[in-house]
Length: 527
Image (cartoon, rainbow, N blue to C red; front, side, top):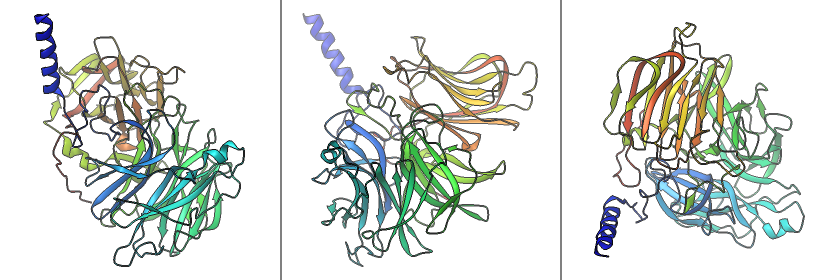
């Protein structure tokens, strides 16, 4: 008995020493899948990011939240804020369901001219525009159970008051009528709303965020339609001397590798109608786990960045992932850029520069030719950032590798492969043997992003957390985001080549500090 007590005390002492808590006292580092550089709720269910706005030095992140279960249920607006897009302070729930319904996705704007009259000229309001989802009304079989309401804050988003005359945009009798994204259109001096409506989007305008006028529809017969359209966004972007408009639209099923994904369109918008260029479906992210992403509003003009974040999950298995007392995380914040390549306009995604403030001592990899497997770090702990440059100028050579990249593995023979398939011309993430699989077998598998590499150097930039990897390849032209849940943490990281060799010309590894237990170290953004 004494021996048992000694052992038990030792275990408890070790646990007390090794556990780290966040600023709210929530134990985080003892959870095997808890993200350390990605935002996640302290407990319970989280899905789509919404209402993101920058105001008075703070980035606000609202999100779909159910505080009573780890399975999707009556939606609230959870809330977090940050001064650097990296370290997040969890705030009290912003919006609760009421007699009009649950609080679905939407957006928040800074009404700096007090067009709504909900604040004052001296203290203009933040105004949230969101979808009410009336479940009792839905259960009666009618179609008009979703409509748009607003709430406002005059204390920098700390507290919110719902507009007494909600809804501001009633439902005209359409079953899916949701997820308003609102922005100020300077040329027409009006607010614009893009709204998901079944298999298309509708655009409305308003002088005051309260009275809305229909302008046009877009999307019927255009783009991917295997799932209902959701969570749209519309914004201008410059590329060279050209200004184009980019529209994001998420679909719950029918993504390039199955399930949830976000497509985008590039075109022109005149304050009334959006016209898309081209007919090819384009994807923000080819991985299985980036959905419902939208961009921040009111980012300062001098910053000049279009800032994006997505839900790091997929509706095929979102209610099942084995994360314990919480479910759902966000991608890292990303900067979007529009580039003109291959006679087309394409989105580029990169992690925000502020993420570099988490880097520890870098490890440089020596240039060498990889044949088979090559261990590059003996002791592996997540999170970690990896940059690799492979020399592909002799890709037509007989001994050039058919596939190459990086392997994460553990002693249980579980592994995750991330790399490039030179034979079939595509990037891939293979989590067939990475551990957990969903009961419907939609999790494990090989997932692809087509890309014909014609450059002498092929680059891969990876952000790897305890249960996710984000791959940014070819300078961010190719992006893949995926979760993984091994039964034992991956503790080995290797380069690999199959059926040939691949020269590594340059490589760097950085350990990343946890956003939950480190002091804030800022990186001043320069543009």
